[in-house]
Amino acid sequence: MTVLNDNAKIRCFGGDPGKEFYGNYHDHEWGFPSHNDQYLFEMLILEGAQAGLSWETVLKKREGYRRAFHHFDPGKVASMEEDELNDLRQNPEIIRNRLKIYGTRQNARVFLKIQEEFGSFDHYVWNFVNGKPIINHWHRFEDVPNQTPTSDALSKDLKKRGMTFVGSTIIYAYMQAIGMVNDHLTTCWCYKSCNVGNQVQGYKSMPKFKIRS
Image 1 (cartoon, helix red, strand yellow):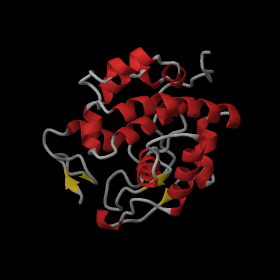
Image 2 (cartoon, one colour; image 1 turned 120 degrees about the vertical axis):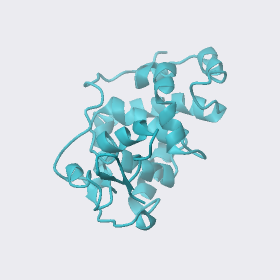
Image 3 (tube, one colour; image 1 turned 30 degrees about the vertical axis):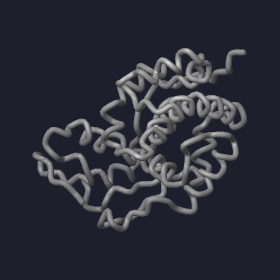
Image 4 (cartoon, rainbow, N blue to C red; image 1 turned 135 degrees about the horizontal axis):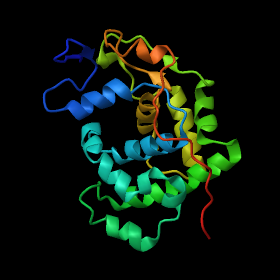
């Protein structure tokens, strides 16, 4: 359902008192197209971390994740040692699930291989929507799907390449997050902004990395 915030702006979510961080994410990131590889990697890991939990929970731990995983530098994450990963299982700033922690390193390694094959992860992932966001026209959140044939295809390919926590539902949420699909409700004040070329700034351009031997 939509939420009316103090400034009379209708949001899809994040307008409740005490959840300004959630509203800020809605207003400046969710649904806005991003083509920055480091940001794309961050959101991929955070969406996977959400499995079985709420997105609100993950957002509260976002800064902890950035500190724990080298600010989502995929080259550094791909090279993390066993001791470093094991230590993170005691870190209250992140979700202390062993499979998710080790899966982050695994996904970073696959991410780097995709960069090498396609020139960037951006080129790879946006090809699934032919380089342009899918613009939907939902009036109620009850009508928004939690997976689509496109998320099925992307999920299947990522799994084939060796990624974990990339089921179709997670991947559709990822597509929403990085703006591959605009699922803001038509009554939301961000709906039109997502459709006029606005982008998430994210991180500065990053070089490609290779895994240390």
